[in-house]
Image (cartoon, rainbow, N blue to C red; front, side, top):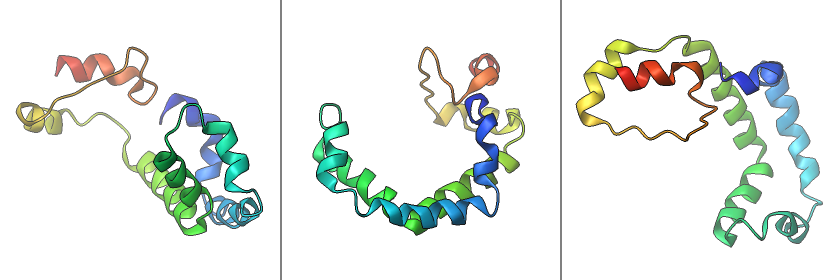
Length: 111
């Protein structure tokens, strides 16, 4: 599991994805202009539109949370055989501090 998500794992398990998806309907009264004020300096309008469409779509929120839970339940350890199989076909880029890769970054780079 991604280390910074551990305290929030309960959000990804049933019934919370459905509950949070339903609560997203409460965001509709928030105007796009109010939300845009928060992001206008760092996000282009097209990217903001994607955010707005996502946070006001109950089905998208439920799907994202459900898929995140499935991924956390499925990906338990580094698949070294797969890395070996695809290494000649892949380019891997990591940030200096990559919170998604976690403690496996050294193993991935070695493989």
